[in-house]
Length: 439
Ligand SMILES: Cc1ncc(COP(=O)(O)O)c(C=O)c1O
Image (cartoon, rainbow, N blue to C red; front, side):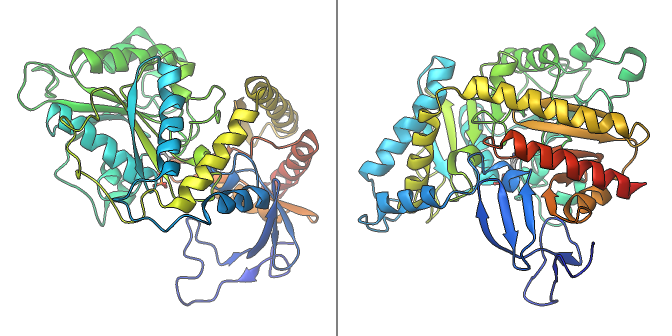
C-alpha cells in the first residue's frame, strides 16, 4: 500500500509539501506520543529519525505543559531585558560544557543551529580576525548564507551564500569515500598527515606567520548529513592539534551529536578532544522551541574581546524557549543511567539491523550503530527509494528514517533515545519488508 490510503495528496498551493524531501504524497500528522506519530488517516509511524534528531525524549505533551507553566507569568521579554529564568538557563548550559571540559566559559544563545554556527564564527573571528575556515569534506553546518559555505553540498550555496568566505576542505573522513582507503581500508599515517599540512607556502593555506590565515577549524565528531560518519579518532586529533598549533579556534559542531546522541554527553568526548567553542541545540529543546547555544572558553566570549551587540535577534531567548530548555535539562539531570542505557540502545540496534541485513546480503553492504544512531549502507544509491518504502511498504505501520544527498547509499537512523525494545522489533520488521520491496 503506497497510495492515497496512507497519505494525503499534497495540494499545490501555499508551499504545501515544501519539505526537505519533496514527495507527491506525504502523511499529515495530527498527533505524537512517545516514539509514534499518527497521521490524519489514522496510520501510525514510528519516528526513527526523532524529528531531525531533536526529540530525544519522544513526543511528550507533559514536557510542553510543564514548560509553559514555568513561563506563563513572565512578560514576553525582548532580547535586551534580563530575567531570572534566562540567567538560570545560561548558567545551567555553561556548566554542561565547562564541567565536561574542566574550564570556564560563556554562553551565547541563538535561534537555530545555522545561526549559532555563525555566532561561533564571529567569536573566532573576534579573536583571530576574519580569516579562512577549515572543515572536512562531507561537513554539514547549516544552510544559511554563511553556513552554506561550510556545508559540503554545492546545492545549498547555489542561490545565496557568503562567497567572500574562504573555506578549505580537508579530505573526507569517511574511508568509503576517501581516495586513499581502498588499499588500506582504514586511515593511514598519510591520511593523518593530509589533515595536518595546511599553514605552509606549499599548501597555499596560511597559518601562524601569515597575515591571511586560518581563523577557525570546524568539525562534527560524527558527520550526520555526511552519512553518519565518525572520523577516526587519531585522524580527528591530528586535525585538531594542528589547527591549534596554527592558532585557529577549534569549533565543535555538536548540534546533532550533543546530549548523548552518539553516547557520551558530547560527541567530542569520544575522541578525547577539547574544543574552544561548542555549538549545540537539538538535544536541549526536544524539538519544542527554536533555541541554540554557543559555549566559548574564556576569554573568547568576554565583552572586551567579543563586543556586545555583535549579534542579536528579537526572538533569541524568549521565555517560552528558555522554559522548554529548563524543563528538558531537568529531564536530563534525572536520567542518571543515561550512559549505560545508550550503550544498551546501541547494542540493541546493532543486533536488529545485523539480523535483517544478513537476510539481504545483495542489498545491504554494511550496518552499524553508535550511541543512539545507526546507519544502513546499501549496495547502491537507493536510500531515497528505501526511505519511501520504510514509510509505506508495511501494511500495519510506517517508519520514518533520514537520507541525505551527500550520502545517497546511506539510511540514517536516530530514534528518540527512549525507544523501547518492542519498538526496535517493529523497526526491524518494517526494515525487512521495505528491503523486500526494493528488489
Ligand atoms: C551538524 C549540524 N550542524 C548544523 C545544523 C543546522 O541546524 P539548523 O537546521 O537548526 O539550522 C544541523 C541540522 O541538522 C546539523 O545536524
